[in-house]
View (tube, rainbow, N blue to C red):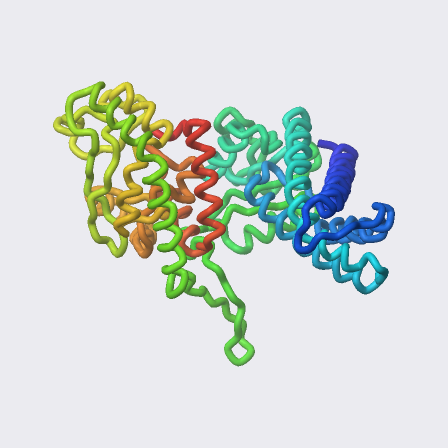
Length: 466
């Protein structure tokens, strides 16, 4: 996408934000006259509040700029967007209210205070709706005019990034080629190999690349510095895929030892009040979920019973918190004798052991719903690393770095790895990275985000759920 198109998109976003905020402010004014809260009031004409409206709009633009909400992101999460908009609108409302009270002192000041609550809620809703429209417009333009992307490296990480860009055209990237220290190959996974790392500056110029992803997680510091320097000299944006095997995105703090700088890896595992808060959320979601879904669960159980012989539920030993085993409950989606000949194996996409109904249940994750009972009993959590069978845990703990750290927290019905497509027969190393990232960056809002994305994926049908 050209710089002119990006500028027009930013301008369009600003104008839509201002239009939505103005509509919200006017509707708040009208609602304040209709709804006697906190006390009945008779407002003056709307033009008395034009100055307040102007201050509110200016505060919004300044706050949104501070939150980088006018920066064009590739494929942003709408949940993250909602968080940012809500936070920015809240701060802008406080700033506008304080500024108005300091500069707009008339007989209508008290009335303006009565509009704050309505204006805050309506602004958050209206601006979010406007942002959905501008993000849709941005994605359409990026699909038609994707930004050229250069990948440094040809290993598994680089191929994974290539696959992401191909499968998600909404990201707005077109991989022009690979750069690597190797010679002798013409292409990798159907994409041309453009040259060695020493020629990266020339390659960026010739192909008009504005963004480079360095997919060399085990590169040395000197190698990374040389690559970054070459890219920055060509004014290209540089993104680096980090080595996550040992610290896995742990939160770091900078300290010193008598002037000697040190990086401290903080213990951010669930402790104290965090355990109580997460358990309270688990009890709420599992209790309410079992009550509300009980008719649906009975209906699914009846269908399973009618389709094939055998029990409705399937229990399997999994490894949970602190490496302790527990019996995980699922709706049965395979034949009763599924593992008699094969033994413990992972399910595959065209697994002949699945029943017809079971394929649908697994694709929509309905077979996982009985695990709400495990959550209610305290054996699992709504969100957490997915539990594996003991035989697989023994295999993985010897080959995957920090694999057993996943068991520092309760296993979950869904997790950060699952909502990012790492389900079924996918890399256990990549799954472990995502699981450890979740454990070390946990928050209640993070859990809510994962739950919302899980519901969306279930409605769409996850292609890796089999």
